[in-house]
Amino acid sequence: MAMGYSDKVMDHFINPRNVGEIENPDGVGEVGNAKCGDIMKVYLRVEDGILIDVKFKTFGCASAIATSSMATELIKGKPVADALELTNRAVVEALDGLPAVKMHCSVLAEEAVRSAIKNYYDTHGIAYNPALFAGLDEEHDHGDLAEEV
Ligand code: FES
Image (cartoon, rainbow, N blue to C red; front, side, top):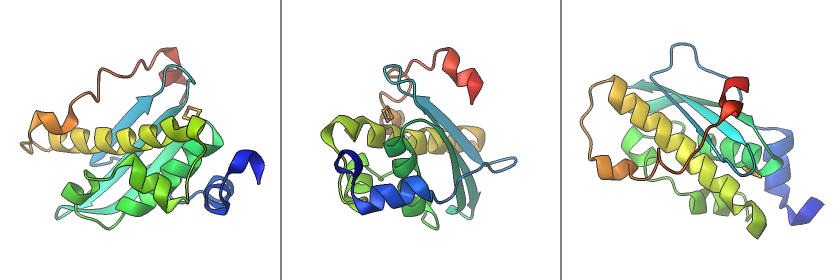
């Protein structure tokens, strides 16, 4: 087991679920971590308030890929409002843990989902409490890497 990764992390890294993009998505979010340079993009398809499809593209480490994969699995088929409650902790638990130095990768996955939902709300004229997305835009410096995804 490399670097103390669980079997589930290895499984979702080697065989990630929901990789790809959705054409004309109802919501799309992109976040990056300025320190490691990893970037995640999440696409949403929404019908009657339900996330009928979720896809992702991650340019990043094994944990970033595994957490994106698990995050999309956890929210697919759920109401949008439920997906907004997804925490990085829930993603880590579903993966049977992550090494401490890799916890920020799960934070990135949570934020990619939240960013995509914010975009869905914004582009569909759905009112929301801005506090729900507090801190989402400030923490990230997408830098030039964003162009490469
Ligand atoms: Fe930064 Fe994994 S090392 S997201």
